[in-house]
Length: 480
Image 1 (spheres, helix red, strand yellow):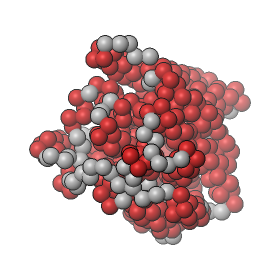
Image 2 (cartoon, one colour):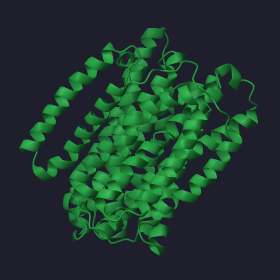
Image 3 (cartoon, rainbow, N blue to C red):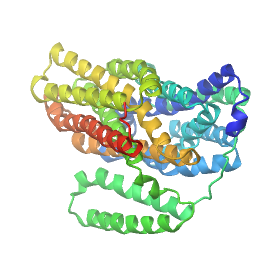
Image 4 (cartoon, rainbow, N blue to C red):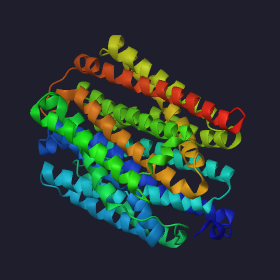
């Protein structure tokens, strides 16, 4: 479906395509949040310690992040709906493998395969939505709705995970994907037309392998460093590998006519700011969700269901504010929602830091403060995604929209992987299945992490300022 072909779709058909394609983002987001809530139970069930639990999350995220662009290129060439359906089937099968995993090694391997399947879902579906909505204002609103689905998954994942873990063992959080995949398969076959990219990109196997290696080394360093020592010989070898690998990757990508990562795109300040903003937002999201899980379940002894309910302020803020942000981007541009996003994220992180640093105890007041902090953070997340996505797509020519979307989606997942690794390093012994950590001890460990979350919000404000100022100078008019 080229842009011209998408014009023949009626408004109701375009809305149906948006709803069906957004369901893939819901499925991916649900899996991420539901697994986070289940981590303590997984650790107990399979006797997995700190590093193992981090790899359960990041094995999925590293593969997902690495293959997003290649999956998009394959979809453009061979058909987006076809690749989307393959991804759905693969996601269902690998969810079964996760549910049946007898030990940590099998679970981590199955999670990596699940990440491969997930790379064929949300980015491919977003390409279908963008192609179906050629009008920029309608596209901005559609992206706002798309972003709100992530907020819905944040709400549904922890609560559904809590219900499942209350009644069943941890394997149920993977079993639940199977009926959801079946429903998605039926709706995609019914509603979504086949489509192809106007210009198909050549595959870049060398760049792809190098990107996987770089992400695995980088995230692996963050996970393993706190345990083996930052100056231990294995870590020095990882650092050397990162330096050499980065140099080779840049050399390979700058010489290719169709690189995996088009480094020239970073010559646009707005695009670079959008990518860094996506990275910051997802570092803060992943850290917040992991902190919440282990503070309430390990530190306070709450049940998974109660922990899932504690995340609702984040989800509510993100769900309500995402479509508002989309409409604001459509009418006023990205500057204002980016400032709002950064301000609320920073405020939420700072309030959580204040609570963990001085006011946390066993009373209800500390929980109330943390829930208020979550609500502020959720509003920030809700306002962040639409302007980031719109800025990335709009800062490059229309024919490079796929490049912009692919790199930004990769940055989001890299941010999620980095956030999990950093948060896991801070939690340390609290991730051990047999650990006996008191609330006050754990809150003290988390306090520096909340400062990182606040810093991500401040960074988003600075990036918004730099990007919109640059855009104003280039166009000769101020950016609203």
